Image 1 (cartoon, rainbow, N blue to C red):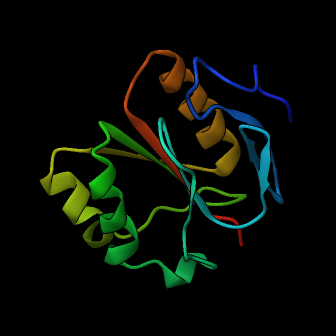
Image 2: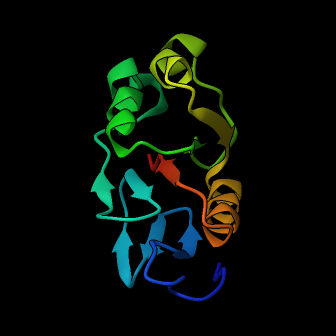
Length: 123
């Protein structure tokens, strides 16, 4: 589904999303990714929801976001709170939603010039 303009003032807008991946700044990603508001899109070494560990979320701390949007895949699944403890201890908000909702919400927050990171799981 096409969401909106391919770019928002040089930021990492998600132009399209689907069950097989996302397009960010003209590049298609078909595996789990971290999409920060600014800077490089990064591979996220998670292949299945059941493999999530605290280290996967702690990796997001270095980006210093205000908010993390966790896209749990094609359906909504909440990670155990212990996996998010590092983000919460740092005062970083975390929202969980399916990937479609995560992509839409990420772009809205990006347009509001928020320091947002989308962590999207593609299994």
